[in-house]
Length: 160
Image 1 (tube, rainbow, N blue to C red):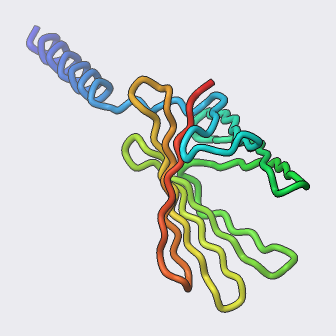
Image 2 (image 1 turned 135 degrees about the vertical axis):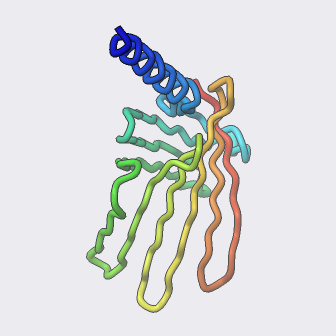
């Protein structure tokens, strides 16, 4: 009889630990969706749209943009795929540049650290992404450090 009570107590204790662990865990924000840059404001002939597909740990980002460059205009399209929490990914380009990227979670924010080596110069960018509590705003802050010093940039996107 006592063995049965011990097993029950052990089972109840185990269930309490599982419930406590799952309820204290943070739910990561959903970055998926189509995001349009709202700040800084773009010119009337410009746009910057990011389509993000996020299935943790894989984050796929497609960027489409356009802008006026005097009478010529310009358009761009970029595709990036990141594996959050994976080892640093390093790529060597034909022009000799070497780029390393690491993507990790820091609490509820995504952090991307990119290091680009071009000859004797190294540029490091630290991008921090956060989604508002209501899920309608994506804020990206970037700190860039290179031979010129350190600069910061902040961009805000609204979910379509």
